[in-house]
Figure 1 (cartoon, rainbow, N blue to C red):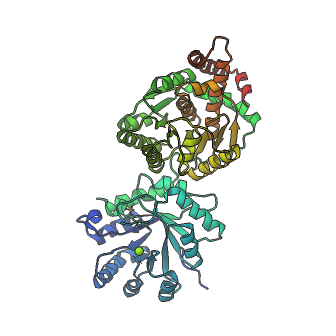
Figure 2 (figure 1 turned 30 degrees about the horizontal axis):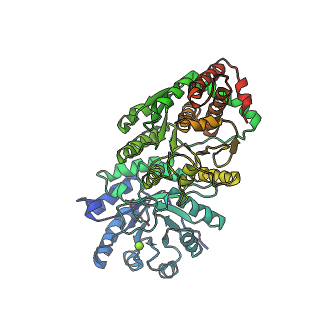
Figure 3 (figure 1 turned 90 degrees about the horizontal axis):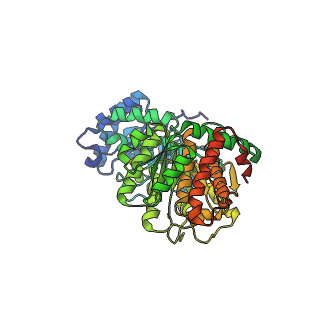
Length: 515
Ligand code: 3NM
Ligand code: MG
């Protein structure tokens, strides 16, 4: 048997001739420009034209794609692929089935299938699809009545299940992919066992005024990892290692005084800013997304705290997230009260779909909601009674971190933190932290401050932040003059400051209280 020529799926253009997307541009000219710009495969998708017209368009496009060595496929219509003599077809779940299409087109034709679920993907792979178009990733106005929106996590799940079923079928994903999310989608969809071979786009190229440039810049994005990608091997960390490394990392932070940009709620602005100063970072409290690009350029980190939510604040959060993601500035999400209201549930979804967070930090209800659990009931912003065993927490935190390819921290009497591979349970802290407002929020500020200087191992940065914070709380609570929450707050800020000073002087004994 002759092996098929390998096909490059990295930038897959799906055409659209509707005025809303193509505008008054000429379809053939747009495809020519896109091919010049580097699209590697093209699908003619036209749900409106008559058969004769469609065959004519296909032949025109083929004159552009064929000399460039770019395969041309036709959506749905096997008859037209045969009539126009193009390289293959793409069939949806409601179209002609794959086996019939294969029989009609022969073994050399490229046949792709739309897959929305693990079941559809496995079936198509078993039936011999050349590639799968996995989606819909994000809601998109380009396609009416799309099935479920599966996000990057849904794509990752499908890839994992294809790999465990032993398929090496090629894969692209589709739906709402653009220049702003291309790198992140490739990064976050990758499972340890299988990654996408490319991205399929309609409007990112077809609706562009400069389709050639749109294709060139997408190609550039696709071939390199996003600026926030963790590329280093993740070293194993023993508790003994941590006792040595934590004070070093804190010293590194306090001596560099990084900027920590907080988009936080009305209640904790002042407290979080004081905590930042005490630990040795430089806080800026700004909820204006328009100034985030300037701030991100200063090399600091970003905290997005959902404690105060309005539609306007959400749009500022998304702007700032994009600005920090673009330069690889570390970002932390604190999904305050995520399970309490529909607004907040939608908010956390929109933020996770809208950008990358290096760390997601929250209490049990918040992390469960962020992980996609249904029916989490939170009364206000407090965690409420715990519903998960420690074992279940570990599974959830680890799984969510692997899915998002980041660090997830669930705070509580035992804090559980994981990067999907390495998981720690931290037993430091004091119950007085639960008696004051904003202690969780300012922990986010602390972790983000550490991450701003220690980017090579974000799990270690997160652990260093937690441990510094919670040991300071233990030391404050142990003071003779601390009688309750009121006297605890100033003592706590003092202890954070003292731990910073000790670390700067190379005195690392404080970290021995780590447990
Ligand atoms: N198929 P844009 S989504 C053609 O989910 C198509 O199967 C989809 O357009 C699917 O890149 C889609 O403009 C449209 O978001 C994608
Ligand atoms: Mg179809």
